[in-house]
Length: 101
Image (spheres, rainbow, N blue to C red):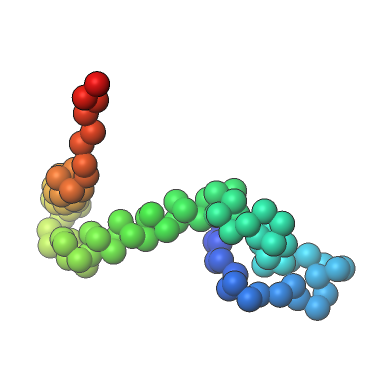
């Protein structure tokens, strides 16, 4: 089951009935207050969601919003080619580190 995680705004406060019935939003707010936003992002997996959204945005900007092929086998091939293109572009922009000493 996929769990939707929406980050609360920085100025969010607990709901009035949080003392009796702690909802997911209230748990997120209290965890952020106790451990910080970065720790909350790590424990909830929000970073993965953000990376996925960024990747899909990059795909739509570079490749386009939809596949052009009509049948499923050709769509799979088109998607594989698109993934290779994006991976190659990312690789070209990534610095390479070499030990010199």
